[in-house]
Image (tube, rainbow, N blue to C red; front, side, top):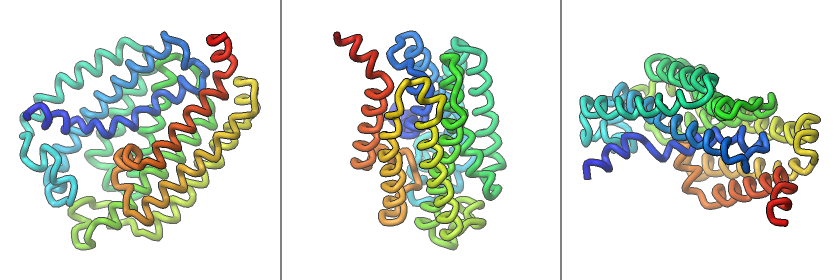
Length: 299
């Protein structure tokens, strides 16, 4: 069906990245605030549309490289299911709807959405071929999602949360590069992604050690920081740290033993232990942060 081609063009599996929008809502203690929840949902949908627009542009630019990739050659543009002209016509209304949703929120959200478009456009046309800057620009996208979520509901975000986001997004970006290196034949590396010629497995493993360590340390320090303890009136958030550690370790296992990680979104939504771990982390975090409000609602 033609509609399926266009849905695939949007890359809906990548929308899981936009769940970072809800981080500010959860950790601001406003998850039960219906008004804030609605604004966060609008921000999420807006970012899904904006990111899909960027993906379509990226697929147009990379169409030739995608055609020689083992998996990417099945994308609608690379496979010929959708023409470049059809893709451009399709992305226009998607972008317009996203802009309309964006302007219904706080103007700080407009800024973060605009910056997201700028950095991803720069990434698509130039930065993706510059070693190290490529993974940092991917990280910027996650930071802007978190900042956008906070801007949408006009709440401040913790410095430790920003640092945690930086490290975990670098971890995912470097893991992606490592997976691409391990799955790509050496003679095809420059053809599929030029920057891969500047990386190797040893380098990416060293970078991932730093990024994964930074993620765990920053998250742990966030849970016990005076501001966090004062805000939530509890030190119990520290007990969610083991789930973060397990999640990092599990992802490293999937990268090294299963050769996964080329598509972080697909890995996260297909691995059952990761899904269960994320669900448990979320449930326990909600119970710890909202315990008193939940009790008040029930009794």
